[in-house]
Length: 384
Image (cartoon, rainbow, N blue to C red):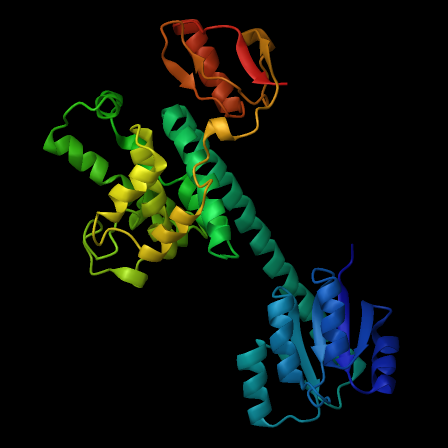
């Protein structure tokens, strides 16, 4: 669909003249005044590629209007067409409205058309770059979560639970933008792929670890942060992972002067949720786990800990979730897209894929390899 150009002025005759002059080249809409222009943008913020505004308008001048346009529709390219071409106006327009181009009246239709065409090209560049980054981001996160699922099925299940709890906590704390927090929770254990399987198994069985092995686990957050730092738009998530073991009083890793509110919010939330889940995973009750955490002076953000304690359903316990119907199928019937409703194990009882996973091409390949080497227990239970 062709993007629209929005012309905003308080003179209806001028708007009509500009619309007639440009309508053969562009899809033009007009708005008489800033309020009408904002109403049009709020109704369809992605329908416009360029906004051209006058400076002198009653109730809301061009700088004020374009500054609000930037909030409502940040991808829209903003231009100003005005007879008040003093330096102060130009500086304000550029600084507050992020103006792409500043045109002075009188402006010929040809000159305005050239400027609008340049603005359209700028809009195409902006949207193309954003779409490319978002596609790259989604693909990168998907690959990393699949690697985690393949390397350690139990860690992947834990990460999914942590993500759900992070979403609940963010909602309780009135955090509006949660995608970075959820990605951080989902990938918080990605560094575990560097731990040798035998060391990981001994750790989960509660066996003693050497100082070198303990150092491997201590470095998991830093390893995860380093991995994500190389992905566009995940620098914030990377920082959360790097600091997720940092205590509120500044002790713990990373070894840098960081404490209290200076620690990223996502890292402070992860610290509480991760430690709570670990304690409950060892068989402790929710209340006794929180009691033990409160006794750890200086470890946690007290506001976050209080908020978690106030949530009755902070843990995504499987028994608390609604049970979905499942069906038993043979491995030959298993397809990409099936959601597992029970762990998939080898005939020797080794976990291959944990319950709750959606079968991806990579997981299917993993299952086929185990089928050939060790055999798989059947039937396989999937969501009906």
